[in-house]
Image (tube, rainbow, N blue to C red; front, side, top):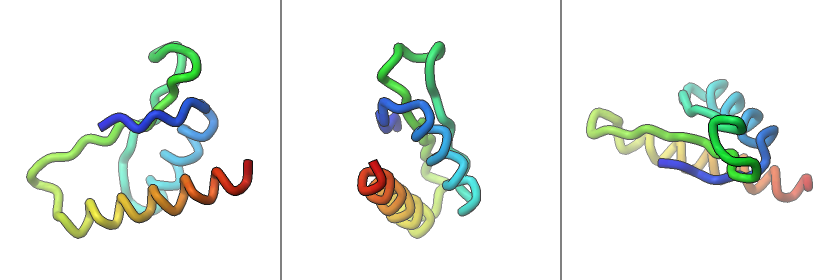
Length: 71
């Protein structure tokens, strides 16, 4: 599941913050993707616990809301 963030620094920072919370999310940025399309890459499977997915969603929502308020 790609989440386009546009800003490569935001992608790296968010992926690192999610890793601190126990989630492995890739930060994909140029030159792997075109400039202005940096993103998080989230891989989900049926093996993931629904509670963990809900926690990931809540964490990501909080982090991106905080990032918008700081910019």
